[in-house]
Length: 179
Image (tube, rainbow, N blue to C red; front, side, top):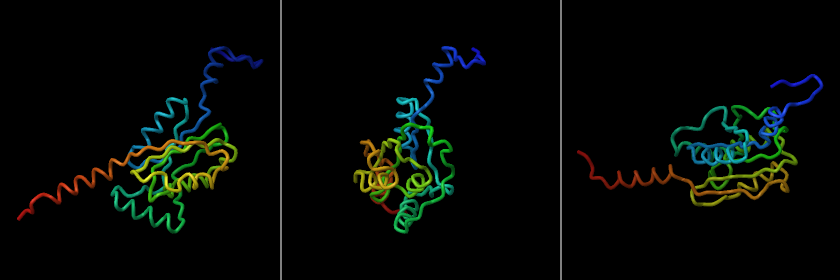
């Protein structure tokens, strides 16, 4: 296929242009639960996928991550981001995914919201949680994006890591002591 100098776009090029992503799926996922949902949204919306990560990763250990996130949230600390979306204005809608940490959005989500101007863009949250619900996470998103542009989101109880740790700990505690 060729494009002409007169600016006429051939049909195949038009079809490709029409399929360019107009939605962004930005997500943070420590264990992969939120990533699964992000990928499903990406496929359904032909969207661009962007993984939100802090410049310094959270600890691998679950309890250490819980303690660090609690301290960051309490102090209002927003960890630096590994990268930002360079062309956020080119997207017409933003799906924003994250797990609930301590009844709120993780500190790295606050960093993402501060680093990106989402004014006027529909923001659709999708959230995973361990059974405690959304907490004040939607309020966090509304505080950084226009409240009237935050759309009805999606939440899912998906706390396999915590349940696994608790189940294994209970099993280990029930074992007879070794000599």
